[in-house]
Image (cartoon, rainbow, N blue to C red; front, side, top):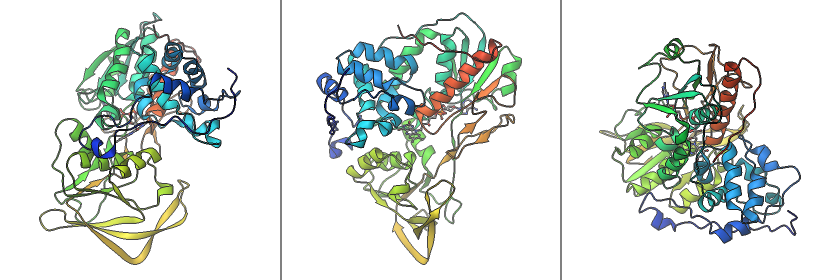
Length: 454
Ligand SMILES: Cc1cc2nc3c(=O)[nH]c(=O)nc-3n(C[C@H](O)[C@H](O)[C@H](O)COP(=O)(O)OP(=O)(O)OC[C@H]3O[C@@H](n4cnc5c(N)ncnc54)[C@H](O)[C@@H]3O)c2cc1C
């Protein structure tokens, strides 16, 4: 499609007003109308080289679905999206949209709102269609973990005709997506709609089974499974080993979110300090306000520039009244019966560390004390490998497991593994592992894929 002049401003994405948002867990961002979606998609300049597609870990053909939406062909856009994306609904709402970072229109103005267009396509183009089995290979594959990585591996293998059984430790499918991402960003109905698309694939699911505790991993291969994919995410939170860390009122943020969204919220109120600057910190800071906290204060040891949270998440948190204190690092939790204050060392930025971000360096003798009623420690998490055999896995900086980067193979023949720091990265790993498993099962080294939503 030939495009005319570049339009720098995106069609505004409407949101529920901040004060109203805090009264419920309903989604904050609002869907484009059909007309708005078409108008926004028409901002896509249809680059000869599809930078957006290339930036996407699952290589979604964003350029093509923008073209289709621009022509009002929402059905066609859904076909394009579902070809590579079994969790399209979730990604339409909370993907970190690497495609938009690469969008050429963004050099002159706002990048095309590709993520929001995906949501619009599913809403207006029969996103309710389902996948079907295409192959008849009929080998048995076990998938450990029902997060984005595991579900994507299961989708890919089941399409090929394998008998897939997913073993999930919790009672919920979806991994961190349903266990921790708050419904005000991603409703659980959206995940359920994605899951419904997979239903005809006949994937068997066994929840409440922790591999390594309830069943040894090795027993899967010994008892009829031809291959295994391990997609266990990052469920072991880092803690701060500081004086007062065990005082009542000091919580581990990841566990806190899991409890809240499992319907068993721990008490919280008054002033809540959240330590950290990533997804978990942002989601906690906004969730506690919905739970009735008077003040939600983020304490982060670097500056905005080094913060891992997405600009959108931080902006929405600040709109809702979250306060952010930069260049402070906790050194003590103080209190008699329970936590009453967080003592922080003031920091300044030094030279970059091995993450490439400027290192926080203490300013000698300068501390600041924040009076608090609760503290949530959100400083990161890593894979929980307890009970699993040594699979020769590396741990990435984000805490996820890394097997062979090309094939996702582990050191145990027939066992593959993967995960990642975002939903779409984890999905890419799940798909890559499934392709390797297919090659392993077919006794060949390469394979191709072809998903076909019906
Ligand atoms: C609060 C929060 C907000 C986030 N927000 C976003 C966002 O907005 N956008 C984005 O793209 N990403 C976001 N992420 C990151 C994203 O959720 C993860 O990168 C993604 O879920 C990883 O997928 P996964 O399948 O590798 O692991 P998980 O989603 O963690 O799934 C792993 C599953 O394995 C299960 N499991 C673990 N061990 C075992 C075992 N031994 N046996 C059986 N089952 C097991 C777990 O219960 C879990 O269900 C967020 C993460 C958090 C914590």
